[in-house]
Image 1 (cartoon, one colour):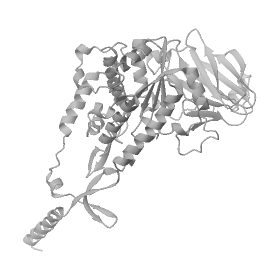
Image 2 (image 1 turned 180 degrees about the horizontal axis):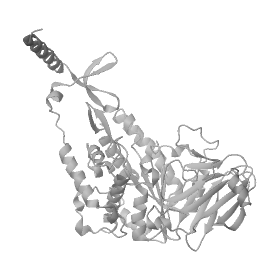
Image 3 (image 1 turned 90 degrees about the horizontal axis):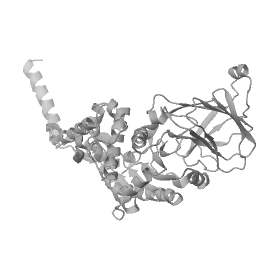
Image 4 (image 1 turned 135 degrees about the vertical axis):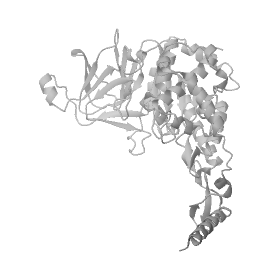
Length: 480
């Protein structure tokens, strides 16, 4: 074929492809997402419009990225983050921080929080989704609050670990299993009685105490929980002298042998009346190692461990993978209520919304989610009426539209409705979405190693930054 014919063929093909862009249009899909292309029957053929092809898409990424870079610079290096001291506001441009919104009818909200933090002891429950796994965000917030207001210990630790965490070293025998009200892969336990922390652990089979050390090394039948301080965590988390095992639903006699290192300090019967109870160990200082060995025909439901100091801030990390804050109505509240009365939490932080974002189809679905969320949180508030409520919304999350990672279209609306719902119900609200930089800010966090490649979850460094942003915004209000 002659060269001019080849050139003409290429020009005709390119002209045809360009002409097709004139007939392409933006098609709205589920979740208020949109793609450029052709809708043929029930199928979608992606194809750029003439505006997209020519690059006229009016993005505002540059301004957002500058704001994210500025915030990251303000936090400083990890070494600085470990210093236990109030923020030095003379060196921080606080005008760029996302501030906390408080209920209009309760202008003294920050001062009430300050009074609780400065009291003899203040337990904080931090409920949230997978952003909290591994004590992320919670751990940094606990570190900062304990450094200023006193307190020590990591608080709640599940018995059976399903994700890595560095707050304490808790190891158990292989016959333990975990059950969670929010785990869709499991059938709910028969009475839906999961305790305050919405999970429980049980061992399988019978448990026997093996006293001979040689036999113990050879046997797989010993059922135990072993607790050590973690030297990978913040210093204050390594100090605790009040160890509690929370349990219930025990119907047959059981005993627990408690060892400190190799010394037996107690051989204690558990209370087999099916109700919630707490086995407490108080020590003069942090035990190097505590081991609990069980002797029982059946397992109690162990709702978790709490490792605390004797005073100050105690903050529990309660990570619920896949949850959206709407499972509390499913709980049998008997052990939940009893544990709350025992532990007396004074502040509850809820951090939800991210898991709902990909499934929201329109504004009506957001409004429905708001009603369900309010009902669930107000049920918790009804059971713990003394607690002050704070809500942290989801961060920016990206989905691919026309080959680019952009904010889910309904996320800004969800963020605003969460703020309105919080204020209307008497909760404080902090927008993590706006704190990150708002619309289309997540790609900048991913590029700088502050968030994962799923454009949803933070990296450990990013979680520390978010924790510092929230803490600083809170501390500004506490000391104003």
